[in-house]
Image 1 (cartoon, rainbow, N blue to C red):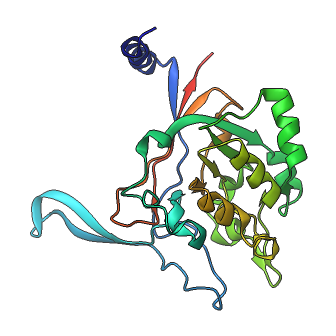
Image 2 (image 1 turned 90 degrees about the vertical axis):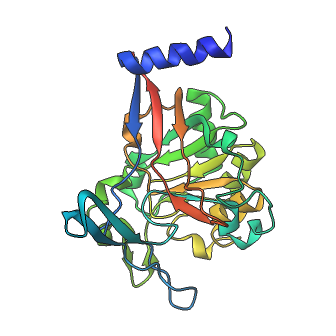
Length: 263
């Protein structure tokens, strides 16, 4: 089948509902949960601000528009390699230089929502991933891998979403060995439904924050604060995760969309 026929068939399936577009994005606004960093590490991202320029009034009688203040890594967002010191030297490692061909790819959805509900400190191991592959098929080169935790159910409550206490944040994520295993499979990137691509306990791992450290060291991408992964199959969907083309950008809020075939 020619590529033209493939695209024509896809257009028909989208129009007929044979392929559903699932929004994997949380709402971006002043109430969006944002990462809170220890003061000895870095400054926090300032709370998102949305300011009205005009709304069919004396400042603009026929139009409404706003200006915004937000960090690159706010809400459902994309981490480019330049986000981390290990990826800082890639010439194609910022949001304006990366290869957009890599952003649209099959997605593997690893459902460990039950485990995460039982233990907010759940860590995904190689044994978990290999058991998932034995059931659903191997993860392929150039594919996205995301972990379903259903953490987006807390998106309206920042305290629950961050789930931090005097011992630190308690959110699920991958071990360093899992990220190394997935990089060995030549994935395009890794994503989670939590505030970042790493587990809450990742600061104490070796290396610290292994998802960030290792993904970006190998010019791979990260996705965080994803939503609605419960609407995606384990395999068979296509994920579109495109950051804004920010000059020298280290990341960007995104509208993550999944193309999901219907039975």
